[in-house]
Image (cartoon, rainbow, N blue to C red; front, side, top):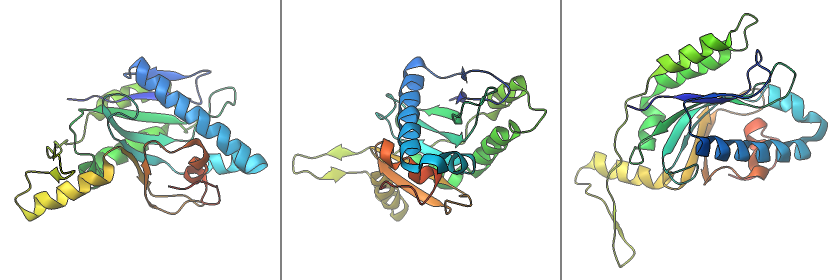
Amino acid sequence: MSTPGFYGKLAVRGDFIHRGLTPGFIEAWDAWLTAGLSASRQTLGEAWLEAYLVSPLWRFAVAPGLLGEQAFTGVMMPSVDRVGRYFPLTIVLPLPVHSDLGHLLGAAEDWFERAENLLLSTLEADAEAEAFERGVGELGSPLLLDALPVRSEASGGLVWPADTAAARGLALMQQGWQGASLWWGRGSERVAPGLVRFAGMPPAQAFCSLLSEHGEGQA
C-alpha cells in the first residue's frame, strides 16, 4: 500500500521539511513551485502576499510521467516558515502507475478531508512539527482502483476492454486525466470552487490562477 509523505514550509520550523518522498519527486515539485511562485509574484506585484495567504487548499492528482514515473495525489496549502519565508506545505501520496486517478475525485473524500485538516492544524498557535509528522504517517491511503488497460491500434484508435456502460464511462474519464494534472477544492474568497485540468503541470504563468481568479494564465 502507498504511504504519504510531505514537503514544504512549516511555521514552527526554520527551513524546508520533508519525509517519505523521493529526491527525484522533491526536486521536480520544488522546481515547479518555485517557478510558479516567482511568476505569480511578478504578475501580482504588491498584491501577491495577500493573494497567497488567502489562496485555497488545492487537492490534486498528477498523471504518471509528469513528476516521475509514478502518479501522485495530495493536498497543497499556502504556508510560511518560522522566519517568514513563504512556500506551500504539501501532503503527497505516491500512487502505482496504473492507478485510476478519476476514481479519486469522487471516492476519496474522507482521505482528502483528513489531509486538509492535518495541514490546517499546523496553523494553530500550539502546533508541533512532530504531531504533524505522526499525523501524516497515520493518514494511510484511500481505496485505489486500477485504470482500464488500453491498446493503441495502427489506425490511431484506442481500444479498451469496456463491455458495460460503467466501463465505457471509466474509459472516457481516463482520457481526461492521461498526461494531465487535475486540481480541485472548496475555493476561497478569491477562487471559486471547481475542478481545473492542465495538460501537464500548471505552467508557471498559470500559477496565479491557483491563487486568485484575477491572476493571468489559462488552464
